[in-house]
Every structure is written in C-alpha cells, then in structure tokens.
Length: 449
Image 1 (cartoon, rainbow, N blue to C red):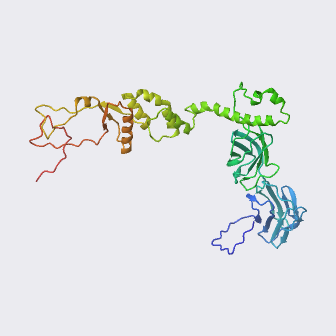
Image 2 (cartoon, one colour):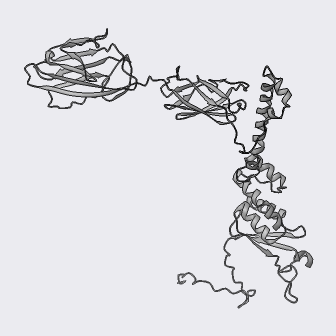
Image 3 (cartoon, rainbow, N blue to C red):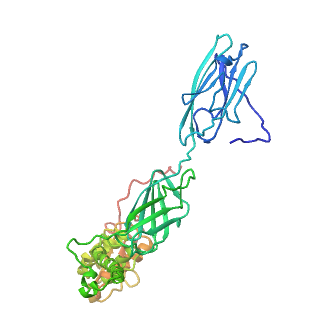
C-alpha cells in the first residue's frame, strides 16, 4: 500500500556515523514488518558511501533461499513491476514475484554484494511476515443444551451476523431450528436457537456469519459440520416408548409409516416433558435453584422480609427462614435476624428507668413521668456498638418489629454517643462528693502583675 503525501516537511535531521561502506536502504517491505500484502513486490537499494560503486555482476539476492537476482532478475521474480536501476554509487532492485506469498508465511531476503574492486562487501539477511489471508475453518460442533450449540474453529473468530447460521435436519421427523443470537469467545462460538432441537437427530450447520480477526470469512468446504441434537440425561432403567404402547394390530397395519412418524413427533414432546420433570430436584435445591425460583421458594415459605437481596442472599435466607420462624418471639431470634440482614452484633436489654426518690425529686427539676409497671415489664432496648445511619435505623426497627413478640415494646436504640463534656462546678449549687469530678491539671495562667 502506498500513501501519497501532499507535502512533507522535515524539522530535524540527525546524522549517524557509520564505518560501513555499503548499506541496504529504502527496503519495502521493511525488516521485521508484519501483515505485508500477499502480492507485494520486494524493493531494496544498495548504496556505496564511497567512490567505488556497487559491483552488479557480483550481487546476489535470495528470497526464501530461492535465487531471485544474479546480476539480472531471475525467472519467477520478473513480473511487470520488476526493475533494475544502476547509478554511480547505488543499485536499486524491485523483485516482482509471479506467485503471491503464502498467507502468514515468514519471508527471508538474503543479499550479498561488494564494491567494484572487492575492497568492501556486504552479507545481510532480513525478515518480514505476510498478512493473514487464510479463511477460518469449522472444526466441530456440539449441542450443549436443548437450545444451545457450540462451534469450534481453528483460529480466533468474530461473529458479525448473529443470524448467519443455517441448520438443516438430516433425519425425519425433526424440528426445524433457527438462530436467535450468537457470541464468540476466542475460537468458540455459542449459538442460541429459537426452539429445542430434536434429540439424537443429525443436524448439518452451515456457518456464514463468522470472520476471523483479519476479516477473512469462512469458505466452503470448511463452513459445514454435522452434530447430534441434544438428548437430556435420563435414568438408565427408564423405558417410556409411546410406539410400544400402540396396539400391535395398529403397528402392523402401518404400511406407509405415517403412524410411526406421528408417534415419533409425540415421543419427542414426551421426552422434553420428562426432561423438565427430571430437572425439578435442581429447582428445589436451594443451592442450585435459579433466582426466579428462589423468589418462589421464599414466597412459598411466607417470607415476611421485604428487603432487596441478591441471589446468594436469597438462597441463604431460604435456607434459614424456617429456623428464624422457630426463633421468632425470642431474644435469640432478634439477634440472629439483625446479624443476618445487617451484619451487626446487638444486645437486647430490659427497659431501665430512673426512680423517683421521695424527699429528693423536685417537680420541674428531676421529676420523670414513667409508664405503667406492666408496660415497662414488656419493654426493651437494643444496644449496638457503632453509630447507625437513618436508613440502617429504619431497617433495624423493621426487623425487630417483625421478629419480636407481639405484646412487647421496642423502646430505644442505644448507640455510642459523643464523649461527655466536663460540667462546670457551680458555687452554692454543686456539692462536694456529689457533683465534684477529678479533672486534669488546670492550665498555667500568668500572674496578674
């Protein structure tokens, strides 16, 4: 590929000193170049930095150990673009191979030359790699599920058309299937079908919507592959054949085979239903059940908690919900429920209130209006070890209201508060031994001179 520049401005040139008299310059493709076009010509220029000039009759060029130039361009490299230009101090060569390079091959160019008179010589080899023009090949296909097919390729591929896959049943009766989506992962492509394929029936897949990372499409005959329709696992001792349940005289009278084909269609539906029934243990298993079935399991258990949970948390709740029901109405149930949903360690405390002492309490000063004795008996507080946000406070209160006994009362949430401040000691009011506190050394004040 050539790029024509409208203008080229050189801002800085650095001179590199060298003791070599002969050098290879203006090489195209260049040394270690990748993705070279498959039909590229090889260009190079041999320069003598002295005054002797290049000895063309001695110059030899090999391309992949094949002699391409020996004083003149050799057959096989003398295409229409081939060229030899000699000047007083240089020799320019263009070798045009008549046969394109092989895809992804590594090409070596070996040059031997010398100056006129043989005072200086050059023996140099460089390499470049040809572009990838090889079409990807389908290796195998396998049905991974009733509606999923996995296809393997010999190189990394990309899906450019998710519907570019043709499925043809090679046996009858069989359900025709169409692709709905396809995703690629390196050398594998997973195809999702619109309906379940017929079990144990041969399908032929023709790939059209796949290319490799260099935009090469899949080409015949390596674009087709056969595979067997997915058959769900069944108990080895199961024998549920509808054809064997048809009366013998009806089977003997089936000369055309139409009855057998009709019963085979019903047999396929029956096997799919049996496979769904076989999957019930996976649905009932809390550890393996899909999330939508976890929601149904929790609903069936009468889950009273309306919190947003992920699939793992739903599975954990379903596994302990019955145990939480057994602990409902107990202090242990409150503690365990808060630990499960919030990850907090709490302590349930009975309600404690200040007593009103006769001869000591003063109306308007330390008079406390309390509740009835029965209400206080069934009331409690909860203490946590850190400050909670408003959202956490509401969630904790909701949990407690659901788990606590119905006749009890959750009064207060006790959280660590700010450290107490030192109260001032008031002359005439504070009493030594009652309101006095031992404080640290007071600050040193300057004397009032």
